[in-house]
Image (tube, rainbow, N blue to C red; front, side, top):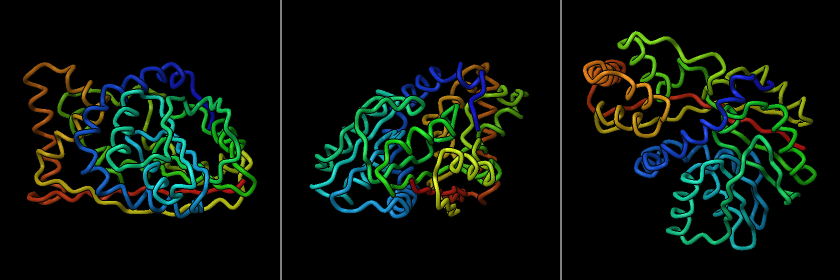
Length: 284
């Protein structure tokens, strides 16, 4: 799992995408975390986070699983949470402050080049961030070097697109309506690591042992189909850019089609979208 030249070129754009979506994430984080909290809990469990421990959260976004880990390590522990998006970190800091958590440090940093002075973390967490790192094996090796002996890295990645409608449904539906091609080869792909064999090989190539993968099903809930469409438009910059690039009539048809498709697959009324994610763990 090495980098592609196309992905390397898109990395700065990826950071801009997260900055551009930060307001949407702050708006929708309660709905998102209502489903995703169980994944944060599982990563903290798999990595063996304990009271008084030192934890690194990579690609923390709006502050998860950093907040969950901070509650676990308590006042005598610490969490360093990094992300490449300054705007996402602004939201994460505000959330931690509202919760009265003083044992988290948020820092802007790129997961692809972890030039951190700190070492000896008891656990490293990464919830839905590995897929966006061009050279996964190289990054895993850097993460391993930051762990204390017997420390663990626990990460969550998405399963195949057909099992993650929260991500795939809107884009696939809109492209059909607008007669658009699939994303260019090498574009950042949230489901890029949905290959169990390759994922284990990447962990082992980076020097990790005791690799384990646990599938989980998480359910996103919305009050009605249109709420899902708005949610996806406001948190997913690639989808929003695709929609905004259409003429007004096609834009409306595409968004209406997304709403109708989510109504069709869920039966209408309150929306419950089940998605599969994989939680993986390796030991130094």
